[in-house]
Image (cartoon, rainbow, N blue to C red; front, side, top):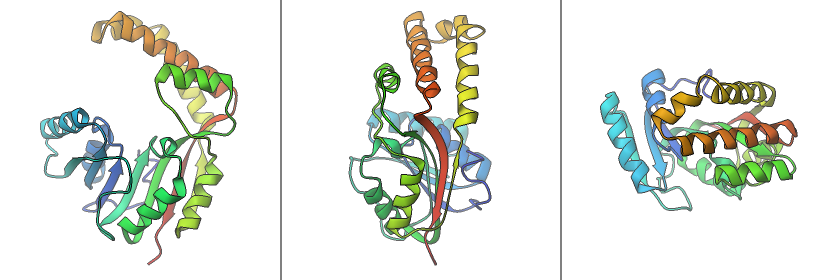
Length: 224
């Protein structure tokens, strides 16, 4: 997260985060960067859990969670200072339409700040990981993200491929899952869940090793 928002002042700023999940990123934006965050999520149970976790952490006054339907962002024009996203845009097929909608929602000078997964060329290893993780990613490169941002009207666009770093990170996580975390994971959840996660990380590492499954940072600014 620190790398995603590096150099951008978030204190007191209104930030929109789609796919806020279980509020981990949302609460961290409030705690670490003093941002006021609106998280959007498709699943009502996650919204309920997020509100509870934010209240427990003491950040209920800085964060808001909304249960929304797939489609255009249900927010007013020029109503947010920044747009934060991590691992979400890859699940949306029409990225240019999304960024055009984000452009509408941002105030002039607002930033799109993101990190995501990229599938350069589909292959069997990536398909196996998507099946193991019950996820689907649309084929897109980091360059295609920056092209879509530019076409939507953003400027000051930049990107950074982080695949080498994440390849090492995922390998280390797999080693930990196979070793020190193996019994701990079963105790926290149960052996079946633990083994499913282990299988998912084995598939993830195999997919990353192909070089067609990549990760990276991207950002763009709405002109003043």
